[in-house]
Length: 80
Length: 367
Image (cartoon, rainbow over all chains, first blue to last red; front, top):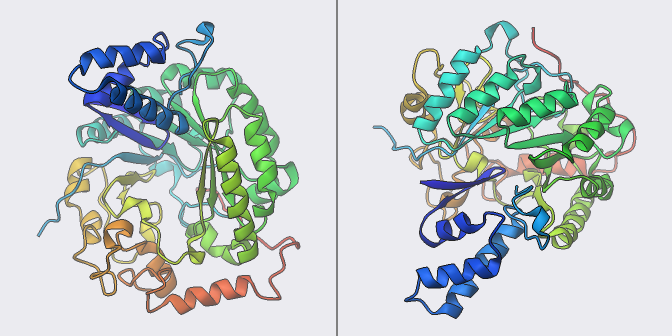
């Protein structure tokens, strides 16, 4: 079992949530993550996959579990 | 009959009751654990392994002041090696930059730094010592360390009007999370309650201010707020339910369902020196006593909210009614709610002056 830890919270990851989080590696862009998952879940409507991923990432961002960065020098650094 | 236990989420490890601060709302029991009885590094290391085997994911190092343990680095390392997420709940004393680096290297994941206020004088009054300036230094050091940071402000009558200043302090820091936790009335806080319980007007203002702050800071800083439950309509789901998610180990190895459980008379707590953590979690008398719904009196037993608040807080029931099995008197349906109303009324009465410095009962230090 994989777990995403944050202060006083832990999310057990499986299925799509695990596929998304594993790709939040400080290297891939959000666009790349979406495109990889659209291939992985090729039976699902691509638009729906995109929306789900953006929604999930936004929720994790609100919880301060991840940061978005546009600066490549920042990549992989200071993820809480 | 044994009531089946869920998998626990977190272990709260009270490493010591020693502390350089003397906060008037300390959640430690009035009878503090002695240094001579503290568990060794080896026993704690065993406890962390047993915790992981029982399914625990996170460990909270607390106290007293966990940094008062000379073996704190070994303890962080031992916990991290088992795969636990390690959280240090600290006053930030005693600490220097080198020690902080060592803690990060040892695998510390998250630090929760407590503040007693936004400025020196009122903060030090509550801590009973000059601690505030030290905390500001620690906060500055944290900016350059790779560590999740929470600032914890314990809120009460004397500082609830300074939330804006506390927010400003947090915003100037690297904290990803701020906790504004109103005092919960147990231990030393119960003894000092008269001088800690805010007025309704103070509370309403604070809720409004924090709601706006929460929206403004969304995505930058996670703002959490714990209300004083004497003002609530329903009781809190204390510890997420008795023996449901969390367990606490005292400095001497007693395993409790919560910080305050030792106030409940005639409740026996098992010690880690004699039984495994898992056995205690699943079978011990203390954890069984209020697990599930069997123990509940009416109106809880037939109440729709019993799966949300799990019958509230047993320690609060005991402290306010003398009966640990009574309905949490905070609940508006509780037969003993009028007593809470009387306490709240006194806090809002004409003689309830906010400005004068009260005579505090300061937390002492153990032998």
